[in-house]
Amino acid sequence: MLPFGIIFFAAVLLALACRLWLGWRHIRHVAAHRGAVPAGFAERIPLAAHQKAAAYTIDRSRAGLVTSVADSGLLLALTLGGGIAWLHELWAARLDGIAYGLAMIFSLLIISTLVDLPFTLYRQFVIEARHGFNRMTLALFVADLAKQALLGLVIGTPAIAAVLWLMGAMGAAWWFWVWLFWAAFNLLLLFVYPTWIAPLFNKFTPLDGGETKSRIESLLERCGFRAAGLFVMDGSKRSSHGNAYFTGFGNNKRIVFFDTLLERLTPGEIEAVLAHELGHFRKKHVVQRIAFLFAGSLLFLWLLGLLIDSPWFYAGLGVPAQNMALALILFFLAAPVFAFPLSPLLSRLSRRHEFEADAYAAAHSAAADLVRALVKLYEDNAATLTPDPLYSAFYDSHPPAAQRIARLQAA
Image (spheres, rainbow, N blue to C red):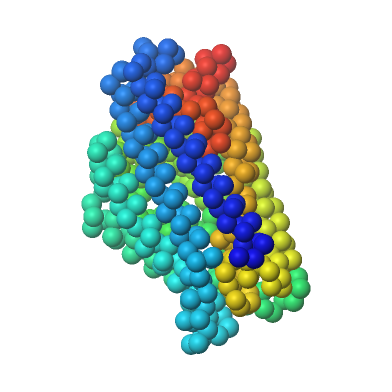
């Protein structure tokens, strides 16, 4: 094994060991605290609901450990195990240029999907069903999968072909032109997703008039926010989990509520949840995240530009050939392994944004309503109130429940 191959192998094993260790810490911590509701929630959440959340979290975490092992095994099989080299021999004998690159990339996507499929089915139809959340039928699951595959072909094929063409036609600065195309492509997707893509999977109906709509419109006016519409999504056909979100970009922004959320929360609580989401916009969190994503992608593509002509990069990852499609594939397989240590930094930034959005919500709606809404959502979604602190610091994009509630009550 070549030196870079040894480094890569060690990085994969180290990242896997870290994931497994953090996962087992989390499972043990949740299990150890399942016997009593935390003091701050004792009057709001029944013990039975707390124990259900613990069982749900443990089941999901155990499944996540198995998935991590499988993902790492697949990564090593494709690289050092010779999987990509075998695919290269298969397609290089039959295709060349952009057609070869498309065949390689889509082959790997199909392999990855097939390997992940049993785990996805288990999570949806065993874990989610066991804890009373699954409402998806097998027919709907297959239909979703088929739609996703078709969208991948229709949207992904020209996008990947454009990237491969730019890599071959733009000389040494190809990475900058690919980045410009990728950024524009993603902004376009953000714009068209609400009206063209999302309706392929869910039904969106305008929010009916009444107290909820009146309070939302008043909140939007107070906050100076313009939306293209208020919609209810039929999330209940797949899951009983509740949520609300913004979608779209520019003047095409929509506010979407799961029907399950509207069934559970009062108008005041819905207003408070929306105020939290508005906080992300007013605090420029969305723009910051897009800018961070674009800056990171520019850095990664620049780095790939440095590696693309380095024989040790290909050989170290088990591939005896060099071309732009292989460079793209290998880099985007290997980069997440070496970026794994950045996870807690990204999670910390996300949690800070959540605290800021909570503070904005408390200033523009009733903090007590947001507290009540969060408690209901924690209970309804079986979110654990007692995550392992280290696991939470490493992975969680939202602050632990106790910290969020304490800050809101002090507002």
